[in-house]
Length: 176
Image (cartoon, rainbow, N blue to C red; front, side, top):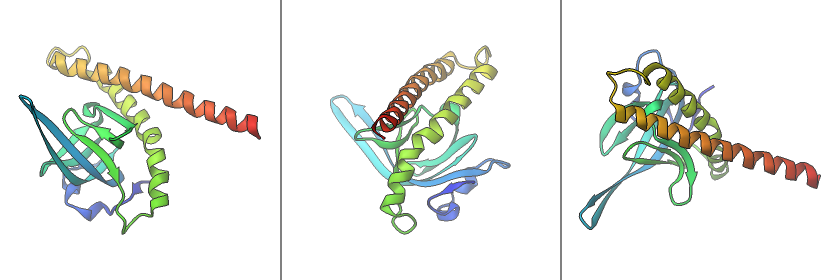
């Protein structure tokens, strides 16, 4: 069953979803890109509608509609100032609550569940991509390295998350 936190037709992002792919998640995200120009940093920020399928993510980046397969997503994470969401090669996307469709309590709950739901999917899709393309001489070596390195990072973070979850579970059992 899909997780729809803003209506799928909230924007026209549905036009970016390849035929045959089912939308499994619909949310708003705060996004940002920072560029360094010498000693000056310029940052662009915007809010966008993101649609996720089991194969990829559709979103806008500074007004341009984009669809990326999961293998091209850098990471799924929960981190301090960034919040909970995903990172592409150049942009950060943090989940946002649309107050007309979701309560604060529901948003907190889904924020806690997001990483556990999508990081395993990201890992699976990166592994599949490497099996198919890891030895393909037509694929740029930098692209292969990007997927390999981000996969290692995601596996390490997922192992930490699972260990932390297990530790919490043990503490709950011991205190009961």
